[in-house]
Picture 1 (cartoon, rainbow over the protein chains, first blue to last red):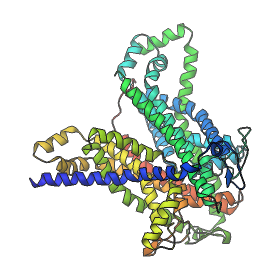
Picture 2: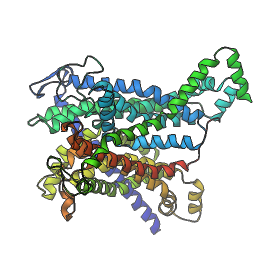
Picture 3: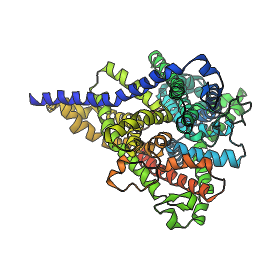
Picture 4: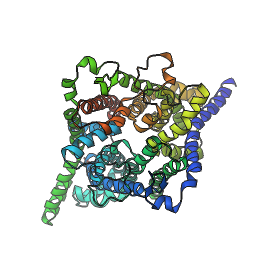
Length: 281
Length: 306
């Protein structure tokens, strides 16, 4: 039974390769936690930086990232949900619809730095927003759209056709059916997509390089037209542009960013699996 | 007919106009993505096209990028991006396909439940964090083990990029394997093939087009990746033509834009040149995604009342 031995060896080999893919993930997360944990203190996450960022905390960068994520959510969620509903419930299979799908695939593939260029050209310079939270949020929102729309569409399409038929047969209009029957069913899936999109935005650096980011700004922004520090950009700056930066602060910043993003990831996963289990169809 | 009656009911109850407004808004939002893509391209052209008047073509496609001396040769940057991307895909493709096969075809249920979230974690790690890790951990390792003067090399960048492309490659390849009809497997097994033979001689070949789509999407991600590449590849704009290029620094198109845009005067030739690189990147990723999308559109549509 030689070929069965081949199969067993083959499976073992595949398991090893998979381990080679997965193990480095644990190593990355593990090393960042191990080396960054020492830097984490209440002061580190709640104080302003001082002494050329070598002392104090990263509070303004955390607040900046939260504000940017909030701005992105405000801009991206309405447009994303509208676009999703159109594609899943209204669009017929015409060449125009195919253009929309192509546009979404394309938006998803545009390099993040090109979004940065666009944000600079359109929002910062042409619309005169200056480097500001507003310009950065809008740039990030456009980048987030394809994630929200494609996961959202999947969620809407997963709702069985019968739901629509029954709603229509009871005299509901198409919109009433969507609003009261389809959307509630698809909501958990759509929320998952929104969180996944937002966590990508929260971790991005390239699009905010020229649209928002302040190198060193030890105060909180007071309006959407202010510049702000942001966690990913801050990590980039202190690990490449500031000589003599203590390693612990670098790893500490990386850890805070990682924790923020992975906890959003966890929330999305929990929502998805919770509702998948409760679903009755 | 049924839908028609429904609309009439709503109109008599006085909600008709509100509903039309909602539906019109949804329609507009649906089309907004097309507008956005056009807008992005338009702004890139607006800021980037002037470089073609300002700099002769011979200079633009020359081999030296030294903006301070008015040398805007994009060739080393294009080749730099190409080398890093190709190297990363050469690493990621076998890893990705093998992992997808393991997760989808071989792994027991409990292992799948652990593996899939972990791959999602990898997809979620911000690129600046991976770049930071690459700089501080991977690069020194490469410097020591290969005796290179610096660890910040094409090879280091390609390793990081490979891991960034892996989640995309794995999930698309998994979908492709999933789409292979059960009857294919049953037929192979019924003829006495082992699972292993079925996987490699029937299932994977049948999923070929989906797997090539996975590779294209992974490549698109790798070409466009900015922060990690900028932090890890060393950023020396040189033609990567010698044999040892893998273990020397290089500079990609994305890193050039990210590193230099902050310091240029708006409206200068250098500024236009960086937008010009943006146009190249936009068109490249557009073509790659177009090629991948033609595969997506062939998929059957399901659900929806229309």
